[in-house]
Amino acid sequence: MNTTTRYVILVVVVLVALHSILSFTHEDYGRATSLSNINSKMPWGGDRDSPYEEVVAPPHPSSPPSSHGRANATILMLARNSDTDSALRSVRELEDRFNHQFHYPWVFLNEEPFSDDFKKRISNVISGEVEFGQIPRDHWYQPEWIDETKAQAGRDKMVQDNIIYGGSVSYRNMCRFNSGFFFRHPLVQKYKWYWRVEPDVHFHCDIDEDPFVFMENNDKVYGFTITMYEYLATIPSLWTTVKQFITENPQFVAEGNAMGYMSDDGGNSYNLCHFWSNFEIANMDFWRSEAYMKYFDYLDSTGGFYYERWGDAPVHSIAAALFARKDQIHFFDQIGYEHNPYTHCPKGNGLWQQKHCSCNPERSFDYDGYSCMRQWDRIQ
Ligand SMILES: Nc1nc2c(ncn2[C@@H]2O[C@H](COP(=O)(O)OP(=O)(O)O)[C@@H](O)[C@H]2O)c(=O)[nH]1
Ligand SMILES: [Mg+2]
Image 1 (cartoon, rainbow, N blue to C red):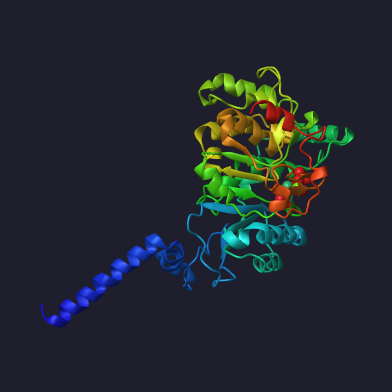
Image 2: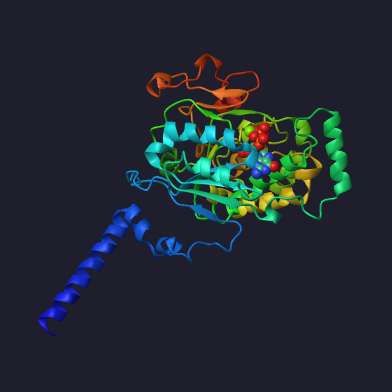
């Protein structure tokens, strides 16, 4: 080997080593130079054939890298094109209060393709990466095996009884999707943690600690800000179905669970307490677990999402309370959050001042008569 060859080999070795070290130590560098990323930027790249995935490049590629110690997490919103303005307001607030510091990627899902207007305006206010996906048909629409005559009769009865969303099939599709499918979407599959956000919600306080990293470091599974009673008329047979499932599958019930929060008589009856799921920070591996998947399939097979109007909130809450330990469920007191008509506003520990909250602590829902914080407190 002559000197030039030796020199060339040495330079190549040094470059490869440098690349490897940077890829491991600097996530942004690794992402920018990864083959899949480079491929997606080429004319043939991306998953253009898949109707379910569309990636929009970060609108601010020069934003400072702050990904050290970040969790494998996404901020997730289900929305319609008609929600553009209200979705934008939620995104803007969460970016301002939290994500401009952390740059977590957002994922938006819809059963229809998102409009160019939706994508353009949302991307414009996001500090990191954003992806827009379409939901596979069989994850959204009422399954063929549902007896439509029976489902229609159930809806008519609820309309007569003035039950909110009682006559809506699309609301039922949404509840079933949020109960059993969102975490399987190809755009969501790669993440472990999610923060669920809805159009027209408000974030009233600075969020300067990373809630995903908190969850990860403290072995948490499910995080909430508001807990309340469910309308019994929407879930008349849910608890009986849950009890049958537990009788057949007792191995899934965790020791140290939160049954005492949602039942006042040791599990015989359900007191209707649930975590309000329009805000959720949770571990999707929990929803993907054997316990939850079997539980969801069991519930789904009864048709209760359509014959009644089972919400994803009681479905998620009951699972979290039964299949996780109670100390794995976390109340995010310091996150000021509002979804019409209720607000959680931090009151104690000087949090309201420290986090520059804009909500009125006197109007916090926590100990409102309709809140379930008392049931939560009694198991702490
Ligand atoms: N794509 C899509 N999203 C929906 C539909 N219905 C509700 N959503 C979304 O599902 C979430 C809950 O719906 P929302 O109307 O806020 O229900 P509420 O909070 O129970 O009153 C929100 O993120 C909505 O944008 C629908 O038919 N299609
Ligand atoms: Mg809502």
